[in-house]
Image (tube, rainbow, N blue to C red; front, side, top):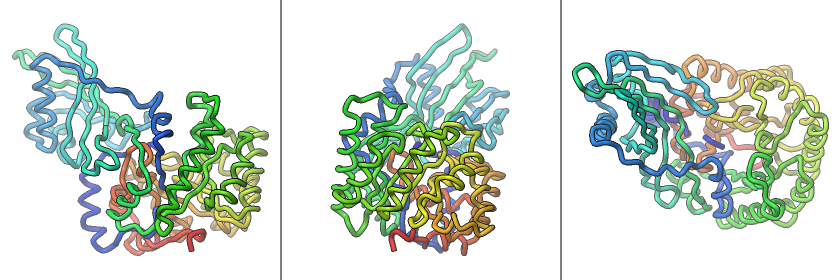
Length: 452
């Protein structure tokens, strides 16, 4: 759900411009969201920092102005850096990126100019300190968006600049740390706005996953009326998708550990006409090593199966090292509770950016062994290629082939949190993952059985 990757965006766009000329957009975005006026501030609370610009000394303001102006000009950038400058780059959850540490004026300048940002940006400072001949500037990289009805401003990265006075009296950047993506800018997104983005990408339909479960998350501010607001969010999602019935299909959002879960699934299926269930294990605090949690999830899967509701599940939990064990518990104890409906594992069992290769290995081996529990098992690729190095991308392609491209569903997760659009996310996946045109064509044309 967080996710907007920026690294090597220029390479992505160039690859997409040539590769997607032969391939139209996907038929379906199987992982999308809307964001209601009520939920947007809940999402932002505790995450969206109010970046109030600070006034820098004139020489520092001029340095940042020149840094932004030279965004794709290696010669211009080189004038701003010290000879031994260090560039450090980080992704969400402090995962290092490929080429995470680059040193030296020439290498840093050429890298920044050619491989990081695809379009111009502004640099907005929000904190400043100085200590003798050393100064520190904290800032955000931001660019305006032409799609003002969806979002009008996007933080693409955060940065910390260290600037030092040289022996000749010149101020130069001696280190620059960039963190991708930038802080989210949560704004309401309704069905009309989403349909416009689908049109832009040439996508026929989208599966809209309600974010109602967020109200009952143990990690968000506790609300006295959380259950009522969860129901209201599912109501809003149902009304929105009903305005575009030929384009959008809605899934109910629930926290499987709460008392709300089972009655809400029933209500979503019978009263709201929502066509599936979305669960987010990490957001809901699910621990698959806890037998009580497993039992509650089993009940929810069984109820969805009884009501013939397909399931989209964000399988990754807060324990990043438990990918393999989580997948084994899920395969052995939870998946058998829903044998008759499609179960779609989001983000290839990860959280995005990236995926969980150890969890995916469990499922790939079960599929290759023709394990009957995997008969209706599918995976979406929302943000899995974002911010991944070449070695990881090679592994991603290998695991997709092990699972079989026919089980891979395109998804963008693009609107939630103001990250990528569906068009941009397809460009990232299509431009970065080393699959063949034939394999991409299969994924492009895949339509989940619950939509056929």
